[in-house]
Length: 632
Image (cartoon, rainbow, N blue to C red):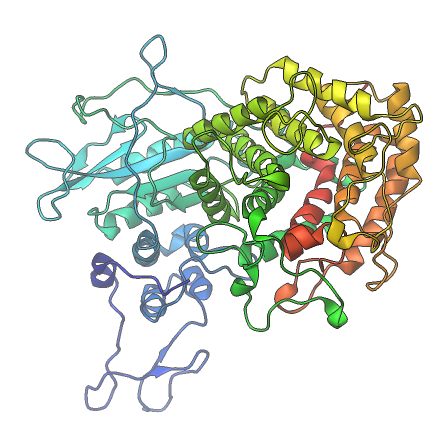
């Protein structure tokens, strides 16, 4: 990332302090971090903080401004994974000093992104805006005081503060910050949405709004005890904007907040209810978070996870397999959309969203990039052949991002992607490469089923015929012994020609089919086909004895096997889970820039490289709470 550009208002508001020395009135030199001022009449010095995190925690406005002026990244994370803004928000006791810290950070963060145009609200039958969300957007608008219209004139505008449809009055030439704080307390106390840290607040400001006003809005949130506060450059449609033909000082009806994301099929992701009960632990969660950190560090600036270019994001020596092992570090450049969808699913499965949480900025960038790749027909990343998988992963990611945030700006892209899934299905059967190609395969079919399951959970209308057709194909592809084939009944495992002979076969299609049958299609886990399939999967548990013994390493199979065995439960699940943890946990890299990732030693890594290996293994270790287990 290039050095952030501080806006002029931030630099004016927070000058870099130069203390005057005791002798000669000369400006004092800056010391290195940790150096103490001279004693016994020596020249006074200024101790520069080690990091933005340290300065923000101390309420050190001059230190924050100095570090930013020297090119510090305002999004850098401390040892606990918190950005400077979050740290400053957590220290409202610093009062004016903290206000200056927030103002300086606001200027630097605003320089990173440009606002998008606003959109008009959708009104319900009673004329009240219908909003389904888990976020409160505090808006600082720039208006002409004579016409009360938006203006781009930097010299003649005034700041108007709005939350939802409420316009705040002026007090001595400033928006009523005390009233904003009172309202935020009310929002905090009455919040019933999805964020585990309470109501998420997003502060957005038009370009000409001074940073000082943004800082005051952030300070009001801090003093109201709001834990989850973000500064967003892009306008979002989470709250309705005032239409052009409405006087902005006219109060419209209060929007209806209709969503409670802690309930429903994805609510357990925040609560992590199944973690310890189902065989996970603090250790598995630490492994997942280390993987997510690696993915965050290796995301491209434009928001994608680059299959063959992710090493450009390595800090220092590029990531490489331990001991010089032969691993497929880089993947196929055609799979950027699929990898980005898969990486986003790993974040979303952990209860993270692009609106709140430790990874919100990374998820936001990934979702934005996926939306930018969508074609007119609704497809994302589909070029030809197996890139249809990429569309399925991208669709699932957009649907889950919408389900977890209810962000209207994601909804239309997700709907178009779902529509393409439906269009691509073979009538009455499953999916293969392309649009209604006439052939089917189990891998693509279950990937599409997973996307449509995410769509259904998000509230999109998915025709039942799509699920009926998928079941028809799975039945057709399953032999009497319960083995599901790739393109024929019981017929072998799918493979990549370039790796043929390097890996042993696995019942990956049987595992995928059982997962699809039980969780998505709704077949009973005690049905004969499921019991037979479970025995086949249980006979081939995960195994990775040593880093150089990779013939049985198949992260794709382990993923679907884990999803399937979790749905079936009981002793077979516990035995499978024990084998999975023995295979994965000790093999995760925990040193250098590769920390948190898995070496891409398995089958299919030739297509997705280290990004694929890390994202899919993180998803596998999130199975304990990713989906609810079907009870029958």
